[in-house]
Image (cartoon, rainbow, N blue to C red; front, side, top):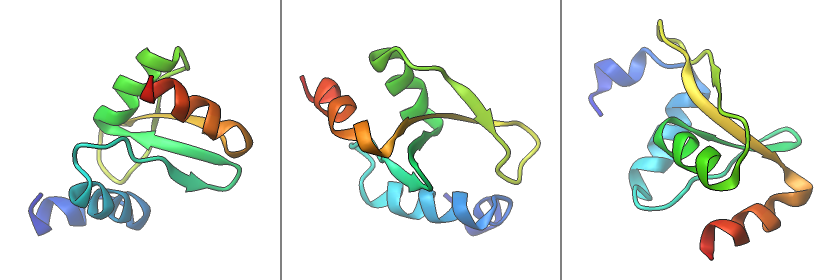
Length: 84
């Protein structure tokens, strides 16, 4: 992703995208408070596979960024379901 496009996002989303670029073929569970959140295509795929709610989050651009999340204390259960 280009620097100009990246600069449009909030610092948190920029950090997410930088990490995601290094691990493009994996789901990125990003810890925010008491939840692990997934964004963009990861959120769309994970919400479908895990049957959890897909929502949106402001990220510094006009459209909402697709997002879903799971409580940190049950993340292992959800991750196991994705691996199966």
